[in-house]
Length: 161
Image (cartoon, rainbow, N blue to C red; front, side, top):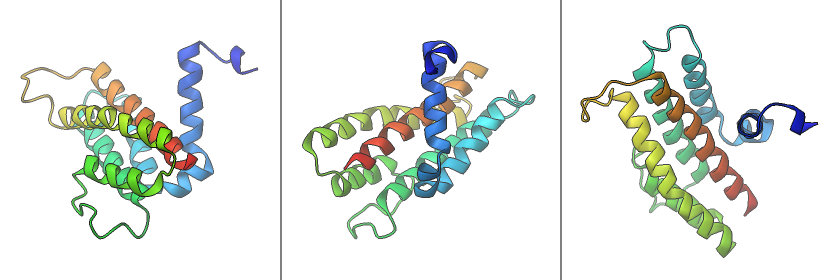
């Protein structure tokens, strides 16, 4: 049945989207999910060209909220309190929550991806001004899609213990 629902890439994207909108993810990450959904909605709006920086801003906020939510309600007192330092905060969440060495190693490897996605979101938010380039719809799609992927994969790792 799943094989009949589109091409392989579409099926993967649909599965991730379904995972993110499932009740469990929404309960664990309500703020980050809401921001990501706003970004995704802006991407597909008729005014997406005008929403380029907003899309980047929303993805950046989704990343920040996700890192905060991953730390849980009582983060370690040594956890970086600055919400913009998402890489430090995700390292702390992984260290605190994962007991399996192999899953922790996988989650640690995802942090390079996390950093790259965060950099894409910043680039999008600031209109690629440091590069002197124009943003395209593909740039916006990339940051929305990969924000989804990185949150999906890290949440699944953190949920596995």
